[in-house]
Image (cartoon, rainbow, N blue to C red; front, side, top):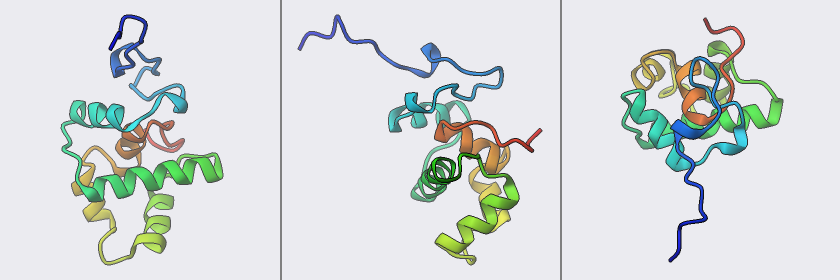
Length: 114
């Protein structure tokens, strides 16, 4: 297989903002999410993926990245209150669930996040 003409898209050679969020959502893929998560010191579990996929769907449906409050309320409606509470989400994404999940999901940083 000749790979000379293929461009390898890694996190390093993609366009990002000053905080490392992808500038183009179309650049995102699962391998890239795994690479970003690794840089964030996160080993992705099935629950991480539920949140990542959820925030991507939310973004493309409403054209906005969910804030923390929006994320918790919306994900609890879809997945359930018993598991997806703020304490658990912070265990998954210790630097901030809305902020870190969005970064790994390849969508813009939530507007109200510092």
